[in-house]
Length: 422
Ligand code: ADP
Figure 1 (spheres, rainbow, N blue to C red):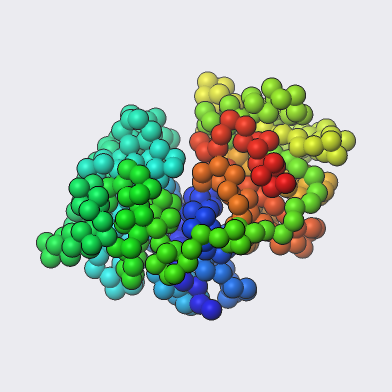
Figure 2 (figure 1 turned 90 degrees about the vertical axis):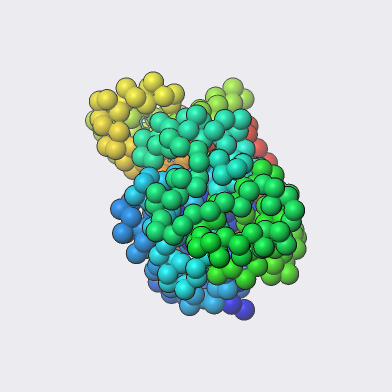
């Protein structure tokens, strides 16, 4: 059976977030780390190719996305889904616009939609404006993002600066009237020369009305939310079977390099429950990284049989800023990522087979260090974060993994995750 839906995601945890929504809507989904070098083994309904193309040079993001497209087409994908962040992370140079343009050209399509709406996580689009929770995107903290500051919540304007196509809007009044009205509006916009239409959605009901209107569209571009309405177009219904993973075994651990507000609260909650936690000091890594990694593993080894352990570099914004002043933001980031990735490797060597990783970049580093190239997607822990399964690796046994993007997850995520798996 060929793949029905072929997805290209611009980062790792975003890919998992999309895969999670597809599984919940009944699709069997595999996520690959980068573009695979061989054909897909096994039968699935959707594949999500996870790239790390959100903030790289636009030309390189286009090249990687086109390579992913080619591979997905070779697997028979009937519809292509370009997934970006629910906060529309991009700059006037891209990469959402340039990648959309390139995919449209390669697929020979003259019209697509764009909407980062993900109501389950508080991302809603109204009259083309993106809200994060109760506030506009540019008041949400995203205006201070180090790589992609989002200073305008008007998505039509933001996207128009990045794409060569004319950008239009399908607003909430049209969406409320259902798939037929959405299709009519698409036709009208096309006749006006619009190539990409931003679509309002403030609820899952809106996304479920949008879904049928996207049937047969060669390319869909969106956050993860739109995915809830697509599987039905292929005759697929939600089912328990889609999220079934092999039985989990082995010790449990959490590795956290995310410094987001939500993650800091999750670390505090884990510690408040009296569970074992090791705080990694980035400045100590400077002196002797290998030594500190060994110290962490020696600390963890006798504790693992009793239950989950946490190793974290997560820290509040002022502490992070202090480290960044000493080391530089990029150097501090990669130093900590490397150390946490070595620790994840060491924990797996100690027999950990259930691993939660907090942080997008941190997850990328850990998955890479563990040599994982493909993940099967399982049950949801919290919106946007499912358990995933990696078949036995050359280096050892199989592994259940949860990759948590910084601001996702309830405050008790680090214990709840293991309960969901049990
Ligand atoms: P999030 O998903 O919350 O953005 P990421 O893992 O993507 O988390 O990014 C966090 C970045 O901060 C990583 O590069 C990580 O190595 C770095 N980092 C983690 N802890 C610290 C710290 N204590 N000081 C400075 N940088 C840190």
